[in-house]
Length: 216
Image (cartoon, rainbow, N blue to C red; front, side, top):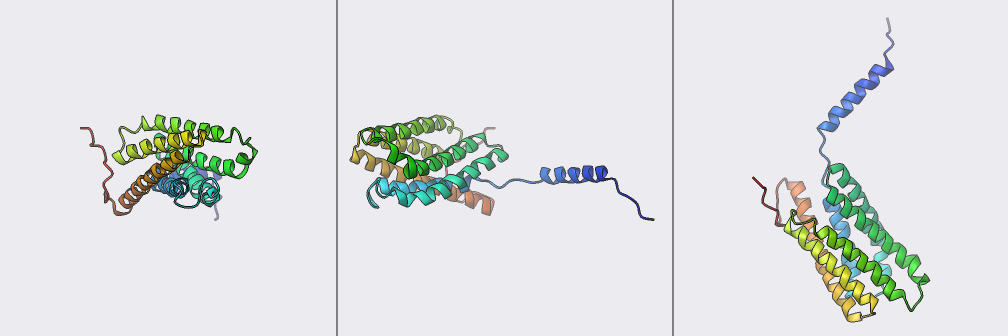
């Protein structure tokens, strides 16, 4: 004789099975994605700022595609996944810089043309310096992290502030210096991303990033 199953009991069983599966599930580390997204996008823009590829701001559009896709959306997703991994610092950092690159895309694509010529440099300088202050605040939270992360945020804060000063006063040389510091920032980001990804793939550290000594 056929029996009629209880939908409520089935639902409870499925929920219990799902919770059991989740308890044994370890999320992948989203940091390599976020670091690669940040590093590659920063490299592209910094080569422009350093006057090694074209002249800023005329050649900014070459960075727009990677800014919205890799630096923006991919990094924003990495930040959301860092929340799931329980890493508040990574979540704030990746989400914020993902938002920065999206805002950069909007700024270059739509907003810059609306600024008065007399005040455009000062406005862009303010935008960059504010991001520099934010980055300096994050740098203060890195002293328990790997040395590579500390260096990354120190260089990034310097990049923002130097570019902000250069744009505020229309100092081309200072902007070029900011571009070179940005290239150094990108190198550290890509190196750290590679180290983190290799660690996840091989199960142990392959490239040194100055991991802090565990406290006993």
